[in-house]
Length: 129
Image (cartoon, rainbow, N blue to C red; front, side, top):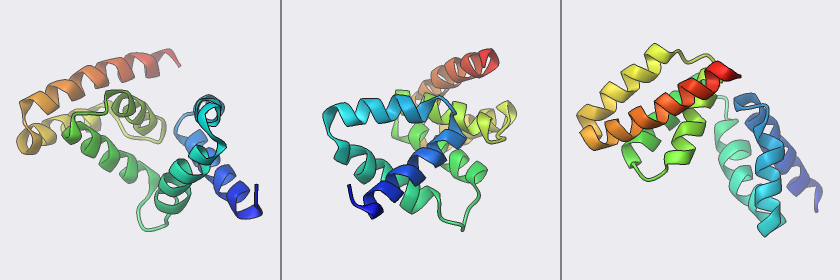
């Protein structure tokens, strides 16, 4: 690996660790099983290049991510992860509920219902950690 590749990989995993301390090892193993390029290219782009930018704080970025994933309606495991991550970086349960309600207006009740399912699981997992 080049130094740039290693730097992006480490920066992405460090930021992922802020969202969920257990995630870096688990995600790295999963992605590296298929190809070591996945972690650097996919997480390097999303976390090291975008999420790490200084223009928006991590709490706000997680709220935006939760809203976007809810509206998409096609990424339930990522939605649950990012709700837990949002809670880990200071988003409150009440704020998550407000995001659910906001998304019901713009993405519809089915998207909100999927969000409720993910939120229930995330709240339960967060309470156990």
